[in-house]
Each structure stands twice: as structure tokens, then as C-alpha cells.
Image (cartoon, rainbow, N blue to C red; front, side, top):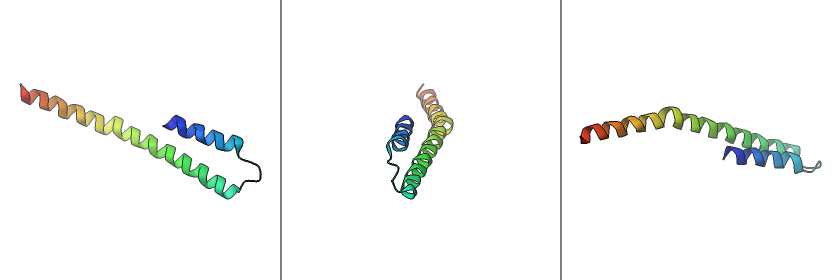
Length: 66
């Protein structure tokens, strides 16, 4: 998804007409950058908090089944 956001940002920058509303363009690009940052933060939370917690829970369940 991050790659798609970067691709969208690049398309907007490359093909936006010179006479485009710069305020609207800047707002759209800002929102895309913010979305990228939010997605990155979400992935880090998953990788460093949720995945290890789920692995511990699964390990505990397997140990209790024995």
C-alpha cells in the first residue's frame, strides 16, 4: 500500500497542470504524506507489539494443550 501511495504522489506531482489550484494540490499531497506516515506507524505497531503478543499467546495455548 505504501508503494501505491508513493506512486499516486508521483503521478500527481508529474502530471498536475501548472494552472492547477496550488492550495488544493498542497492539501492533497499533505494528506497523502500523512497517510503514508500513519500506515508506517500502523505497520510498526503490528510488527513490534501485536505479532509478538500473538506469538506468545499461541505458544501458551499450545503448552496448555499438552
